[in-house]
Image (cartoon, rainbow, N blue to C red; front, side, top):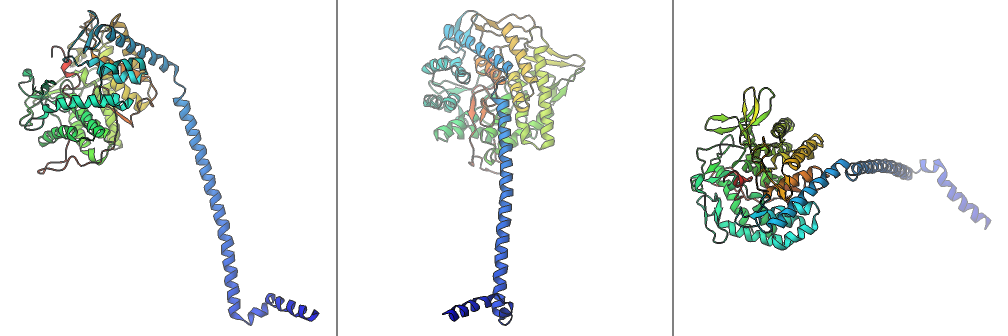
Length: 535
């Protein structure tokens, strides 16, 4: 028994003797392979552990970095600037005053005449101020006023996008269906006047039967949004046919005259301007691109806009001695050194569109936007009331002088200050906006609402509170002093009347090439064109 154990022990020990393997090369090879494999396995595991530890360390550092960024953002956004809060509340109080005056003296009418304390139906009794004010009331958190307005009016797309209340969508669709006959022309370019009850459409006599550029090319945002919300493509098809028609004769400089023949689709010999009756056509080329989230389906809008912006550069001049940049008007081959306050939307448009360019061009256009904004601000600062006139002339050695001297509570300069502040964070634009607001408070506020001025030099008041004062002027002022998270510009796009619509991806092929044409690009009233003087 003892011998058996001894023999077994010797047999096991022989595997530890090198000579055993030297006499058996195959087993030696197997032993070496096993050793090397084990070594690689252990080494690889250690390497993986080390790499894992490095990755974990990197991820931990990244988490800490993101946490720090989040804290910084909280520091920037959450604790509201006390001055901004105070100013925002002042603007809200002005809105409450304007709205309460409308409720008290003009409820259900289009607009309020504050001095005579009665309503007037400037737009056929549609309740324009009610409709225009809905989203401003909602954005400012004036819920009680919003509910009262909702009970009377059902409209429109912006109120639907903000609140999700389908009654607004249904009303918007009803009105759009009533507008559709206006597009029944040989080219699809719409007539600008329509009877909503009977569907009879025509152009005003004072245009010589022509359609107005801004009126005919400023419905894309709304009708595209309506097709997206309802699933019915007919609205989008109507408004995009307009741009197909305009594209057929689109000039090399991208500048169209203010009168367009709806039968031929060609422009007449008339003024080219970024002011009244031309302005919002160019605005919508950019904003439809933004509304579609800048996808390839809407790139053609952007392409057309960039062509038009090259044309805009050809209209830029600078005054002497102060070098104020301004946008001329063009008649034939001659330029007129005149700029409407309505054209003061352009700085905001240029700033908003600059990000689509390469670095060099982006800087050039943004710099021009800032220059033009400075000019527009000085439209206000150059008068005794610190409120801008309707238009300005520029004469050599004299800088600017007021042409038409009324002020009807327009929003365009404030709109541009809002965009520039959002895009730069520069509080200078807030200060300029606040100065303009204070001038409105001083000169235009009366006990029964807000009024315009017949003359910005004398301060004589008129008798009209325009609906766009509530829809645009006060809204942009409120947003100018609100955090950027209130209606963020990467989620919303403002139409020409400052109503925000949600940005939704466009992935369609609406602009199929036709007869060799490039792939292309209403408002029955453009940028308040119909509210000028006697029109």
